[in-house]
Image 1 (tube, rainbow, N blue to C red):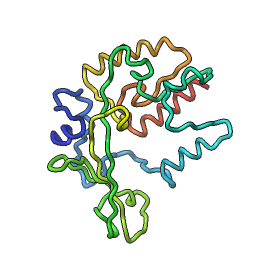
Image 2 (image 1 turned 180 degrees about the horizontal axis):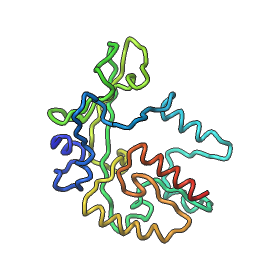
Image 3 (image 1 turned 120 degrees about the vertical axis):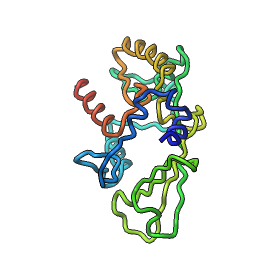
Image 4 (image 1 turned 90 degrees about the vertical axis):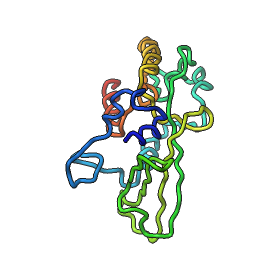
Length: 217
């Protein structure tokens, strides 16, 4: 998976923590699934429906396309849950952390299925790292299909979104300085990939959020 690592991170394995390569499991099995958890699934109406239902409350006001730094002095709160980039929160006083971004290119095809499974990874030969055909997840019936080609890219503020923290010594040294500053703020909770500069999987961050909720309540 050297080729995959180079595409995904833009760095050689020697310049990343071993936790990155540890994310590539090796199985001796006929089971072709990446995850081996006993229970696996996704929301019936997708994650968008889950988020919309969570926000459907008269006490919740959603503001889109709003930079936190533009409104932080005007928002009153007892406890702030911050999930954005921790270096941005502190106005980059210790320097900028590095992130990787993604570009998703969706293509429709006039065929029932494009591939035999939901996701296929491409370590070599192509600029994209994987192709995902989402209709496999929910057994959707359709004579046509749409797939997503996933292209890793450098994070450029204002041009794309930060998806992944880059785990290496340089970034960790910067993050630890921000983490110490964050510990001083009793009214702010930093949580998530960007706020904790940690590579969480979906199940891990859901568990982290639920645990944080219990601690706050």
